[in-house]
Length: 139
Image (cartoon, rainbow, N blue to C red; front, top):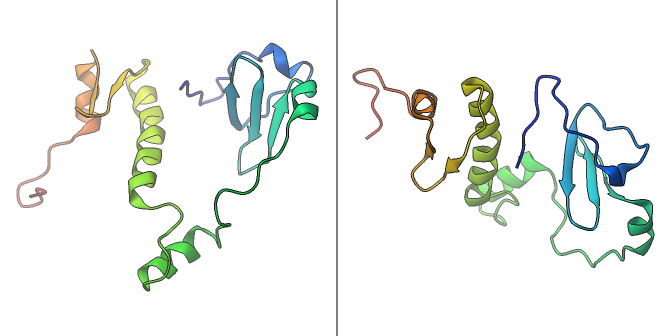
């Protein structure tokens, strides 16, 4: 994964043709094409155009969410588990925080998730696990 922020932009993939990259969003670049999504939950777009015409939409695999907050409240009250449980959300948050870590370190990060370390970048350790004040330690 490559994270761009602070006005930095990736090179425009050839498959997008004249389609301009939005200021926010994501790109999934594959061998046969590109999927582009605007920031803020915009619908995905498949490029090049011929791939979009060929695409066959699959049957829904997941139940529609009633919204993040409603799912969480319902789960707390004994309803169905949230659609973004901690086991999933923790990994998603870790990815976002790695973008922040890379910006603070001003270097690309090669992440060792099991060890919770940025490989070959000891200066990042201070951002990853800070020292707690006496009496505020996590036991």
